[in-house]
Length: 589
Ligand code: NOJ
Image 1: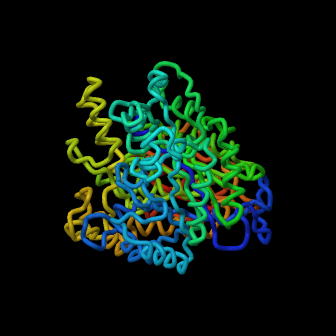
Image 2: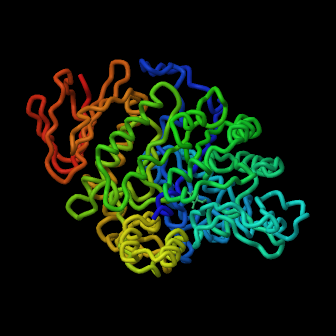
Image 3: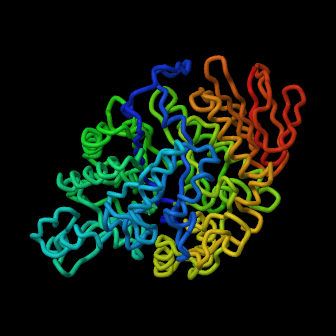
């Protein structure tokens, strides 16, 4: 199952359309924080990002696959959420071994998704609505069907040979490298045509690009400029912590891959990563008004800081996976969640900026993993989790469908899965003689396909996603959980999400305010304050299916309720009784 939890090491970069550079603060506003400088205010810190898996959002031509015209159709819906930025998973031309994370032409749109004209119209439509657009940049690897790789593999003296990592067979077998998606778990693939092995950290059809080659880097910067010239506002840099490699490929300790952290330790933050990031900044990011975020943040707070420290002129933001990886098969402990988010906040309290999320396209559904997807508790726990991500310090990422409280789908046969991680993981587990019953249970709970089922627009046969056959089945619960129904219901997850986004946007204290954990040992409640100058808020989140009592420190003086996912909150002096999964935010007096 490591394959399922390890795949999330990306990076983003943004660009905005205004004239300031990406690291230049808005000097007009004093955010008044005691611990941060006045100059820290930035649009990309204050915005909420909505992530769309384009394959699953809206299909307009009946082929069962979402498309750009579908996104255009739903721009008003996206706007209605109150979000400021949209990040789309890759939309480039691709043979789709890994749903677009295997690119064969970086300047063309995937034919299933539409055309460049559609792209231009989509971007225009977003900008007209004040929404910025974040492009996924997948350049740790390309597709094996990219012209560069076709050339590279054709002969040892082809000019493109050094665009990829090759190990000539006469040197013997290369030192073992584990691969995320390979059915044998091997990252070196033998290629008879030139009697050599090529490296692929992901699938065999995703050969790793050789970043040590300056021509490769220049190609990437040119591609980024192509999209920046079109007006994209940002870039998310996929698996970027892996791009720089020790090309002597030293042997690694046997069994290193059994601990997921080792993969990051040995593959991540390679010797020239900072040099390449600075080069990218000088060549691209500094020339446009863009914001960049990297998938993955190394193995320590220091690594993470080194990526986003403004003085280094590299990236603006990174995201780590410690929080999202906590909820494995068998659940998670609230104490671990509190510790992880509190430690990361502390580390970035004075300098730097992080991302806040509990789900994305590499994870199962947020409410099924971190909340409770039973009919009784799905809605309150979904609202509670959105209260959490939208009230923490850091830029929040909301994954499509989580605003509705969409849940995992219940696949029980391997034939139902479409994700290469699931399919090849299954083959490997079978070959390794694993307990397949257990494997299937874990897959059922954790598979990425859970988070990729089509958006639920209405209660019709395919949830209004397509008139054809959806590429991945629509979740059976779309009769209850869908945009149309939830739009009508004032107390739905959807309307709560909108309210919570509004609350964040109206209150800078929720963006920049100092975070302090309260009741650290409480088994059910996650409580914290946010404080900025004279303003303060108290966030109380019951992470359990039982009633829970919070006894607040005497110095807390409660003001008005700002948001509540129940109709009431029971307060008795300094004691607050929370209903199952209740989330309440109070102003502090
Ligand atoms: C990380 C992406 O988030 C994931 O979806 C993808 O499979 C790998 N990188 C490979 O590109």
